[in-house]
Length: 385
Figure 1 (cartoon, rainbow, N blue to C red):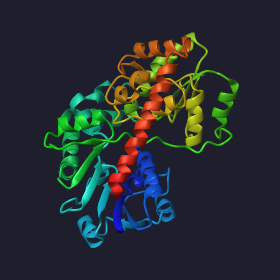
Figure 2: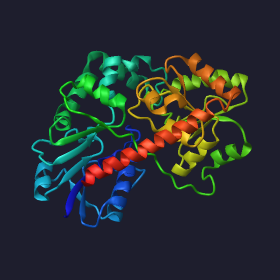
Figure 3: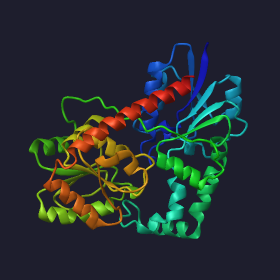
Figure 4: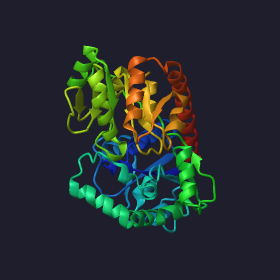
């Protein structure tokens, strides 16, 4: 019997700020198209009033997979779902539906909310602890603090989730998130959610490995054999790059070791190499040859990078907060994201004993990738059911 599915394509339109949302979405859809039959009709929801992400082209992806696009800015969503007799509406990232009318939806919905950091930040006041404003001006930094202290951010977050949560908690929606931490955070902040929130670990990003490293700077560093620590997304405030810079300044005074950051925007000393862009394949090379990944994030709903590091056989020095210990397990070398000396100690530990977590990281890599594969298959079956 023919089925009609509406897929959420809004993550293909978001240029940044939501981490692995697009990687997650594409991994799910790539798997779905391998399993669906020719009888399944697939539509894709997008919004012509929004821009496009640079990583993957929305229209090229839709065309290559015979996805018929529906522009949600032209017609109410409930009308399209009814007119096309959609059997399943899959929402990859619930927060992207802010401002979209979600009322009157009776179709089966599968909906993900990956995290609610915008809610939690207003409760734990994490902005007060940020020491490195990254690319923010002093005025922008001041406004963030004022908006947090005045309650404006909290009010904005409440308004953002008001309509989204009505659909997420409704009887016709199968509610998902990406970690047990996120599931419990949702229950804590939204006690009106009485039903089960299913957990599907984010699927592993799969890169096509080429024979050579494309980035010249990374290629030269790897071929030199010099040891280096690696940090990605160093331009994002909540990834906490400030603590890395503090700890590395001390480490580089004592050891002949480099720091490679992605998108920090500047170098703090001659041992610090900042790179603006790495392809997926080069990312794997960067992980594979690093002494360790540095992951000092204040918050994660899941946390791709530590898993990608250990899958490539590289230790992960990671924050001991939110979902990170759950996902990384005993393979992680943990530190407090508020104490530079704690990170300094962890970095020294790896420099002096690079194989300290070899057994644990290989075992955890097998466990987590198996669970990711199992969870993904269950999700695909639910969408196609």
